[in-house]
Length: 194
Length: 185
Image 1 (cartoon, one colour):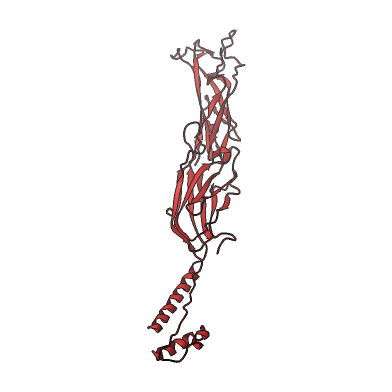
Image 2 (cartoon, helix red, strand yellow; image 1 turned 90 degrees about the horizontal axis):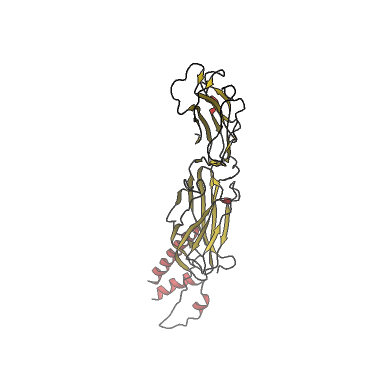
């Protein structure tokens, strides 16, 4: 027991000198060691349930809206088991419109962009939504929105819904392959992380 | 025992430090959104008074020869579009007597040739002459998507067989003009 005490005191002397000096001589001696550690602030988003959301063919091919954007249903993507281990986190959603890879100038009456809204929910009290507002030529395709603060550590499935697919001015869509991007970021709320 | 505990705690700290270095307070995930729009062409609809060029009486009633002042207002195809590079093709069949189908007697003809033109889509209008052996100008290419009106007109009327032939009498001479928009590869 005594030999053991020496070992501990040597290890902990620098950390708890007050404690070591306060011990009195006798047949029983007590030593205390403080074990320190820390946990860094950490947010992890689960891997998206769909790496690519393929909307397929987006233009109506018959009827009164032939050539214009068809009715495209909502799309859902889940980021399972996402968490932040601290209070004061927030979701940020960055949405980039679907834009045709065709580099040629867009013709009058046509558009080569499809705008939509990405809404991330199940994190804070209200969802975080960003809506792209690309022009017919595909300029300014990106929009960003940061949601309200989640006041407690949380683990949850973050649900992202893509909805409201529209073409600028409801113009005819130029033929081609279109691609966009949704970026979800989970991190400390501005001024709210603790 | 206590010593062992200290060692274990040390190991835990080292492990935590390693994890913290690989992650941060912020995480980002992204996913692509893709779609496509097929190349489409739509011919639109004909504006105005139906889809017939009505030329009325074809002959000069004093001579029996084809009138030289035949004319008809152009037809407008509105709402036409192609969402990609396209071709416009015009095709036409001669106006032929619908009831007098036998071979016409000497000095007569039962067919009137003309030229059909589709303009407004391409820089050079597409034209088709029914009396020509070939019509290389009947198909024209537009390199970009386009939405706009197409004007279809007919003109340059001529009696098939020669201007000295007279047209056989018939209540109906009929021809057909066809305009086709197509996606170009």
